Length: 143
Image 1 (cartoon, helix red, strand yellow):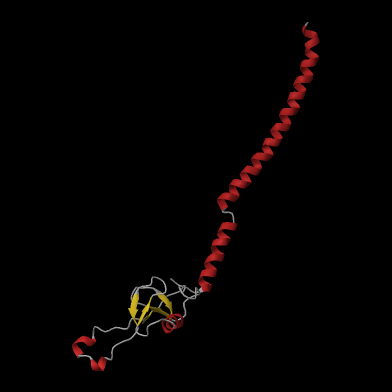
Image 2 (cartoon, rainbow, N blue to C red):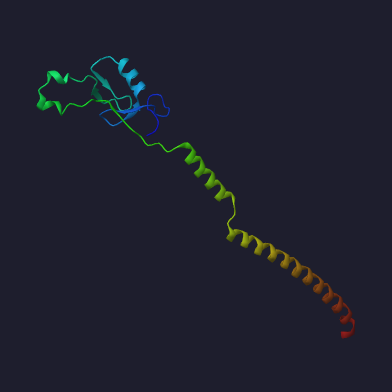
């Protein structure tokens, strides 16, 4: 809702028309001026027609004046500041890129397990070699 459907840029002085679509005031005025009829225009987004002329309220009976509204109304949109969003993005990037304490503990435990595995594997290979050596000495005496 923060982009104009005509210029496709961020809304500048946003205005709403009866169908509910919002455009830049200048873009909508240009669209109306370039239209075929000075009193009726169409929405650039959905093509719904709307009146561009407002009757002179002084010439209208007072009891009807409360029902007359402009077809084009100014809109106030609360667009979050870019700096706040930038800070939030940086904070989220930091959280994603920084391993949590739990991950650090798991990584350290894994590294200790790898060292222990290498020690046990080395000891196993030594013992297997000794076992083979002892079995070779024992085998001739068995027969």
